[in-house]
Length: 400
Image 1 (cartoon, one colour):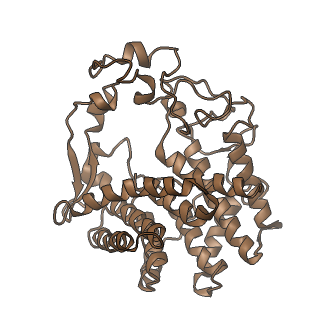
Image 2 (image 1 turned 60 degrees about the vertical axis):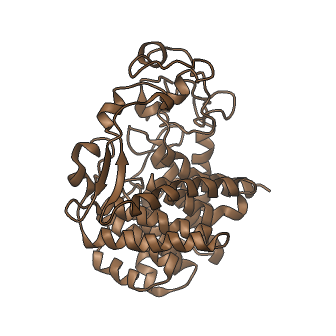
């Protein structure tokens, strides 16, 4: 949830002027999340609340959110049970959102930034992974596989952008966060932090940040299909393919980084090389546009992976509220597991269209079975959507 908020905030910061009437909706969505994070950070001293609901019990039910009566267990991290990963990401979200609201609600913006500083201090002071502290409340659902160094880097990068306090740069330099993975996701933040820090080198022309620019460009060289250093698989239809579960999360997150770095490069007419390949902002933009177009229907299945967009889109999305009849249609509760047989295992289309949601997407053969039970392909997620908001605004406005 925090990563979703950081990405939505970053995209709103970079592309807000191109969002037109959607800018207000983006701000409202961000504020909905940050209001919640403010409660999480201030409900009790020395506790940061990071989860509600026992995941195994909740997954045993297929019911509407209005009917849920499973135990609302509350989970928190603390000095004795730390969670630097979840705290670092929450600090990033609060800091990024503070920049979004700086020009429209200064009081709220300052409140967000003050809390970002506080939550980040907690992440740094009490180091450890929330997966280790919370066990089965976090794993295997949202296990922190990349541990927490990347979130400390990401949180510090956002606080640097929000405060201009150079001590955050010194902190990053002590971390030794030099990994250059070939993906970017809710769990692994290195690539995003590299791109964010590279901005100060490319746009700000500050050579103290040149090493981050090098990391950012090494990342791009691992993604571009015709780069000698590429480590990225593509489907025959041209889609970036990283992992079998919810692959579109990597596509939207990576595409968001690509358009944003292309934007930074364009502002200074900057180019770089992947070996013998000259990379301009246009090189990157073409690849990013190919990914967006694929998601919206230009693919071998002629399937839009955004629900409700185009004529052919997923009808059996793995989503409880979408698949069960609404309260207006059926006021009585179906109970915890009464919804499985009639609404989960059925081949019928979902009665409620989850407009705008992007699902996990096709397999490595560009095939999408559109089965509700096939959750690794048919499940939507907020972090898939938040990442593509920027690229959509970027390509929409560049056509005008």
